[in-house]
Image (cartoon, rainbow, N blue to C red; front, side, top):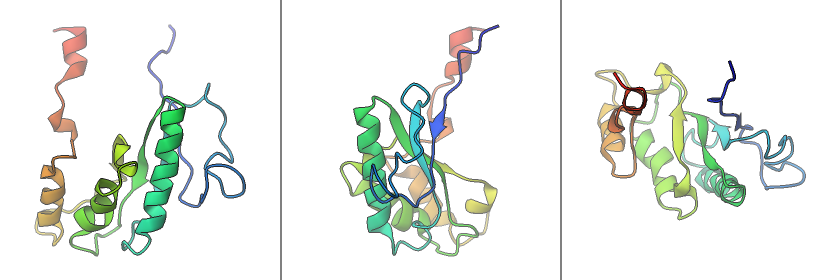
Length: 153
């Protein structure tokens, strides 16, 4: 049987500064024939918000390249371990993305694991709920059940 449902994500870390050349996003890019999604892993610049200009610049580079290559873009890994900033989701992650006309075109953000989301009673819960209810965010539960709708009962 042929495998037809596989997507390949090109996702370098947050060290790139340009699209091409030294420290460029495309330094190790295998080519359009091999990649479906342009993304990045970014933990460093979303730690405190102090590097939000660099964060937005990288999102812009990646998103503009994705548009040129007819691909989607996103953050394949991100988060703040332990959530030491109670309003991290809205102030450090969402605000810079929403406020930039190019960066806001990313299609997805993947928070790495349960150590990066608040648990009941955590000080970041109210902010996470604000992030969850923001009009620009969608979560898995917001989508219809396309899988079962496509294959039938």
